[in-house]
Length: 148
Image 1: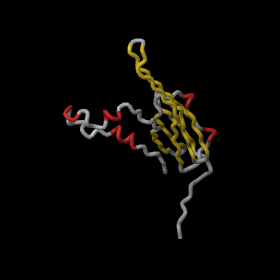
Image 2: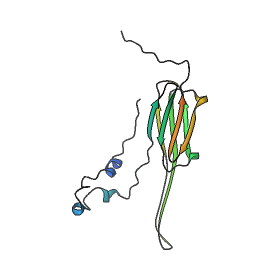
Image 3: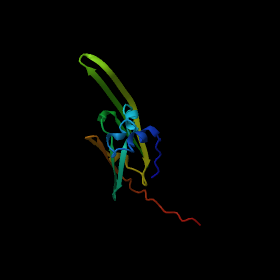
């Protein structure tokens, strides 16, 4: 399965802390204090497994309402998208110090080896994990072609 993702160097920098085990000596010189106010862009992490008659997909989409998740199946192509809405407000007494809002859309598409029978698909969203059951379409058998 080929999957293309957009590379964002700030996501990688936010995860790296080269002096994490050194202690407080280098505190302030690491990359974390510089980037701590940047929100890491939400991503959909997938786990796809294949059984005899169906594909099982688990997609981690935390902090999203199930009404904001959209799944599209077109033959072998599966697309999952979600609208992410995040609001953060810091107050000091009655005075608002900082207010941030993030609205965006995340999506992920992938192709399966066999076509999916759209009529038998099932989707369940619990605790930030979307579980899809995608039955294989009967009658479509993949063939291996030998190259002469």
